[in-house]
Image (cartoon, rainbow, N blue to C red):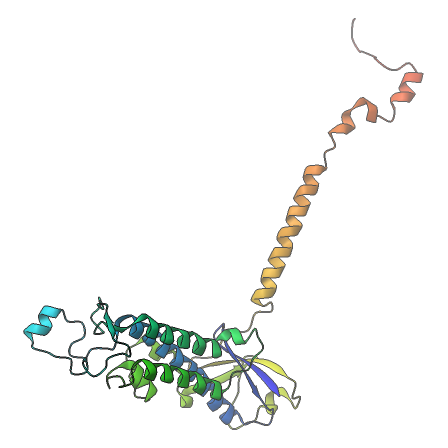
Length: 290
């Protein structure tokens, strides 16, 4: 199987295993689906962290308002009494006024946090160093783990306006957010290898040959952004090792330089001609009047 090391810019993303016979069209769809799926997991984990701390989100017309403003406008959260966490809630006010403050108890918080860490670890870019290839099934498994944890803590479900529920139902609206800049729609995705765009309509073997044991680095980005920067000749780890080696070598040379003291060459006992001058009576000669 061909192993692809997928990157976005210089940032490592994941490893993907495929065959040389795969079409670039299919390959691009598979890689973009995993790439966007990993982003979805990260977004959900970010929201679950807030869910554990401050409870479910308020309706859009109540977010950002103070308690006095809510009373003045006579607004009411209809979902507050429905979305009660298992084991009861502990009030912790959300200072930015985005969530209702009725957070789960510590036991339920641990369920959310533990599941969140497990889901993130399953698709983490650390899997690259572990030489583990990420598949779409692994992304779906991470999403299922998060969905299950939320259902345990909130068996009655989340409000329809809660971003976690919207993410699970693929109804999220990322317009105007930083997250929207990271997502790459399938129809806009491009794969690059060795400063060459992998053209849809061709097969992978048209670029890398028919060797199934090939390992290459491909970069994913949006159409119209031009060719990505070339990979450095020396990897970051190799560069660190080289710098460490040069530093150690420099320290060794410094110690040798300090030990290379030749002042003893000016001493009488080190003068090779001293014995000869003594026999010739040329020692203690002074020029000038005595």
